[in-house]
Length: 422
Image 1 (cartoon, one colour):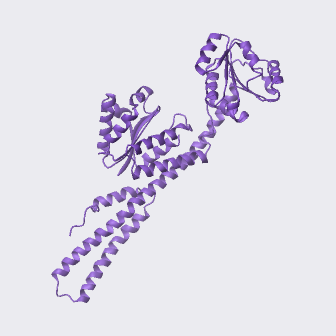
Image 2 (cartoon, rainbow, N blue to C red):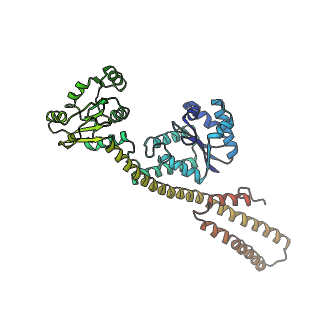
């Protein structure tokens, strides 16, 4: 039985292609069940960045053909169009791919947290469809365990690498609980708007949007469920909010005296200023005031660059963890297959020995009891010696070779799954 992954992702296919393969939940179960004759165990994973089938199958070619026909039926695509973007990984490479996906090493944004939940949902869908057996259960359980190790033993999920996520991370360090902190957006620059979205999504309870053009402020406030203000009103609102994002063009300036005035009303409560404008909106001297935290675009970019370097180190650590986990999985699977193979190999040799011994003794009735016992001992010893080296050498095969494949070859060469003919 082989374990394979067949799919496409953000590396092999553009979004215009990926979106074609989205399947409704009812279609997912339908296509999984259609695979059952070729692949008794299957998991279908579909996100905005990937569409993948994980299969346990004895017939790879027929399984891929079934997938291509199923996708072609739902999406009216020709097999050639499907093969153009899809990749295929088998056994150890398939395990490694799944582990990297679950650990977010194969994500567009390395370290993102959503993918593990999506993989778990896909696996649960397979169980509900009756398509998760012993191999899929074992492999996915180990994938989840590997992902947990990566997230707890490396810094991969704790290194924001874009400016907006760095700003969010800093806000959490300053205030710890964003559910108590209101946000003011001065201007409507793309970066500050994205950061505001991050802050609101992370629990900030109130958002005020001030802009030179009040209509534009109202439009964005409507979209983000905030309150629109004029720029003058926004400057006054600094006394009440905790996080201020600035992205105003045209020489707009927040002076040190503006910040001092706001801080007098705040009674020592911290104020976090994120200046994403170029030229800068906030006087750098304001950052020297007590309880004021001021970061400009260069400050945030420098932190993001440092985090990228640290994340690369974390990625290398994570890859090492996953290699270790893949080796453990391969050894476990090989052992599961190897033990019954050795037992069946011994049964086959001993069965052949018994059969030949019975035929020999049946043709030589004149032998004494002592002579018969000598012949029986000879057959027994000969069988044991013939099996000794293969048994020892099979157990010695390590990670550098595929014990799973060796066991499969022995089963086929000696027809170990067939009954011993008597």
